[in-house]
Every structure is written in structure tokens, then in C-alpha cells.
Image 1 (cartoon, one colour):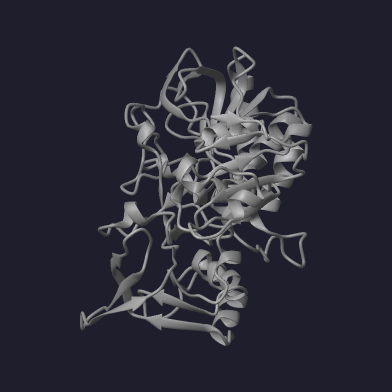
Image 2 (cartoon, one colour):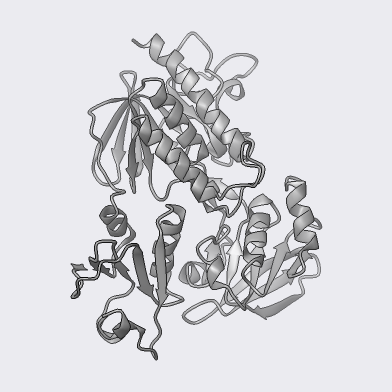
Length: 425
């Protein structure tokens, strides 16, 4: 539902009105932050008069959250897709066929899009949420070449998006492929909105989704005190709070450092007896020396409780199984990810036991490709068991989970796409 403002004052930025613990407001807030959309968050309570100051109806008679667009139009209780559509993020395919379709707008997908379009390939990039993937939720990437002071993940992704669009990439936001078929040297994809996508080659760069705790109340409290990733949109709201982060890798470490700049204290909960060996040294040193940071080892989260929002968590010591309930309004979970590759079940694409896409040399058995491989040549380095279908970044079997590596694989995949297209002219 949309409604124009009653006055003539035009908002210069997006305004978002809602309750502090509203999961719907968090979803929109997170999307705007990751999409580098400037916005103002206006928290409403039942016992203040802010709604009248902003010319809102009484809270009892308005559907929250409310999104006020830059032109003054207001959306009451909108879906995320409606907000994205009003901001110009949602579009439909313009071509009947593309040289290459890229699924996932994280570092690998964005890199592939830039190189594909800059080299003359008709390119479409499909992303089901915000640009940037997990990297886009990172508050500060300090070890990416060319940025000695570091760069916010969302800003890095936005720069890459602008670069891709400059070269002519067609970017389809809030879109998702639900089924793909490979025949006639094409990939034929059904989109979630009922549309179709046809391309001569494709790159899967969908990355991974955050691994869940698999605890009771998890779904109910998501966005209401429980969050996945670094919480870049929530950190500024943590002033004076004692918050917790679950995980021992780089993602968890970056979340801890970002949150420590806002919260009163941050407690990092690690299952292992030390921080992950894969964590960057500079990050672990800062965490261990942080005056407001406490690291607890050999523990795990075993319970979540709260009425409307998260109120307390159960922390259990591994081995002894001793547990305690600790009060906290916010818990950030960064315990790794799992690939979203269920779409490949009905195709010839081969996955490992974890669901990651197997490519190139890893497909070979004593130098021979799998029986489903139809060509005389062996698969290219990033090619899956389906000719012309490639994988890059975190979704790939045995990939290195780094932003720079994902971007490199995206560029490399386009080199192999060129070779494949030359074969099928």
C-alpha cells in the first residue's frame, strides 16, 4: 500500500519507521544498508508522540514498518520486494538470449560480470537479495589489495555493481532461478517470478548461506535480536548493550570488531579451544587485545528465549555440558555457511557431500571425466560436469574462502566461457 504525504516537504533520503524489535523492519534496514541506500531509521514506541511529529497516523491504526521514499511517497507494511521495486532495483530480462548468465552478485559474480561485459559478451547478472553476498555484510575488509585503509563490504560491492552496469551488464535484483535445464548448448532457466532466462553459457556464483544454529525459537527470533553475519545495519543500535557473537572464523571476528565500536561489551563464543587457524592474524590480535571484548572458548549456544524479541541465551560448555542462561538483547551468528545448490539435483552437475559444485580437475578419475561428460576434451578448470556451466567463488568445491580469490575466479571463469563459446559457434 502506498500513500502520498499530506505536506509538500520532500524527503531527501529514505526514511524507515518501525518498532525496535520488528523482524520486518530489520529485513528492510539490512537490505538498504547492504545496498548502500542512504536512509534514516526512526524507532517508534507505543508511548511517544514521534508518529505525530512525522505526520503518521496513531500506531494502532498504521501498518508498520513504514517506508518513506525520497519523493515523499509512503509504503505501509511493504514487502522487501515492493521496497526494492520502488527504489528501481527490480527488473525483468530484456533479451531473449544472452551469451552468459551469472547467478549471484557476490565478489565472484560481480567480477565475472565486469569482465564479461567489458569483453563484449551480452551479460545478465541475477541476484535474489542484495548485491555483495556474504562479503557485502562485512563491516571492513582490510586485506583486499588496493585499499590500505580497508573498505566496507557493501561499498566494495556497490563500486563493482556500478562498474558492471557501466559496461552494460543487465542486473536483475530480487530474482532467483528455481529450475534449470541444459540442452541445445543452452541453459534454460525458470525464474521464481514466472519469467524465463536463456543463455549460451552460465556461471554459478551463488556463494553460501549462513549456517543456522538449528535451535527452537530460532525462526521466530530471527530479526528480533537474532541475526546472521556481522550485523552492519544493527551495530549502531547496540549502544549500551552487552551483545554476543557466535563463531571463531574471519566473519565472526569482523563482526566482533565492528560491534565493539558500538556496544558496551562483546562476548565471542567459540566452539574450539582457540580462534580458527584460518582467521587473519591481524584480526585475532585485535580481538584478543580489545578492552571491551571477551572471548570464551569450548562453548556453544544451546538455547534461545524471548517473548517478542531475544531476551536470553543458553551457553553450554562442551565436554562438561554445564550450562548457564545469560541475558542479552542481541546475538550475532557467524558459524560458516552452506551452499544453496538444491537446484542442481535434477541436472548432470555433480556435487560433493556438502553440496558444493565439483569442477575441473576434481571431476576426473585417473584422468578421465565422469560418464555423464559428453565431450572429447576434459572439463575446463572451473567447469562443472555440464559443458558451458561454470562455478566460481564459495559455492565451488575446495574453494578458498577469501574475497580476492572469489573475484579472481570470477574473472577466470569468463576466460573459459570465451573458449566454450568459440567451440559452440
